[in-house]
Amino acid sequence: MSDDQYKARMQRKKEHIDSRIEEANIDKGIIVLLTGNGKGKSSSSLGMVCRALGYDMKVGIVKFLKGVQDTGEDAFLAKQPNVQTAFMKTGFTWDTQDKEYDTAMAVETWNKAVQYLTDKSINLVVLDELTYMISYKYLDEKMIIDSLNNRPKDQHVVITGRAASDALIDIADTVSEVKDIKHAFRANIKAQKGVDL
Image (cartoon, rainbow, N blue to C red; front, side, top):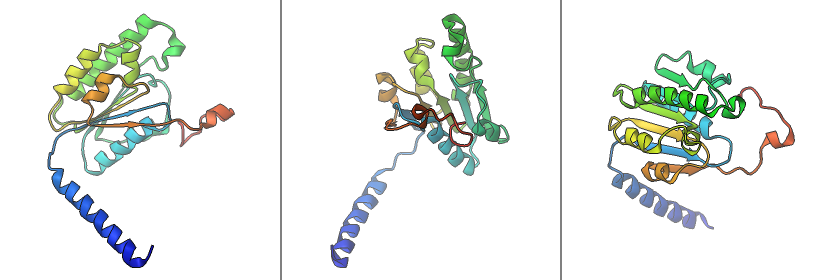
């Protein structure tokens, strides 16, 4: 490709992108759903938390499933004045093996999520591993959808977890599926600080 051809191609691309940006004129809170079997869904949500904090926005983070696992991001976020957190006390449900207890803890944690989802001062709410709460039937999906639909109009929400339901996919503005191609854990490499924890 000659320099002139390259320049013409990039000019066409610029014109297309510029026109799409101009057409995107709706300003509202969005729902981002990160699903799939690959690693990085929660980490991606925390990247959005960093963006929000960069704009001095207020953030509420609700973690289902991983509540008792210490991570580097938890240590970092605990020091951030604009971040509120709620963790499900059970940790991994396969450790407790008690559906009644896990359900009670999910409901308790969801009640905290509802506080964030009704608070106009919170700009971004992360609902980490929420998809499991639906697929395990710990929480009523209709109740969740209603809360998402009735949140403050400018509030953004990020939902993570495998096997997202059709209802979550339908309500989300952006849906990304993280594909699992290869994972160090399958090669017997334990979780690493700063990468996995």
